[in-house]
Image (cartoon, rainbow, N blue to C red; front, side, top):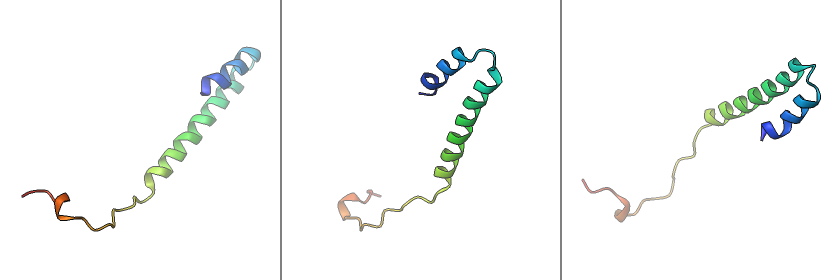
Length: 58
């Protein structure tokens, strides 16, 4: 998805590669921050009572 958006910008503005790289780096850093935040959130636990048929046989 990122290539579809930023490759045309890079082709049109070939003289300013630093600007195009900045767009790509900003997008990747934002995506990484969102994934880190999602991973840091506590997970929901299963609070429904289990039936005896779901218990593992020991």
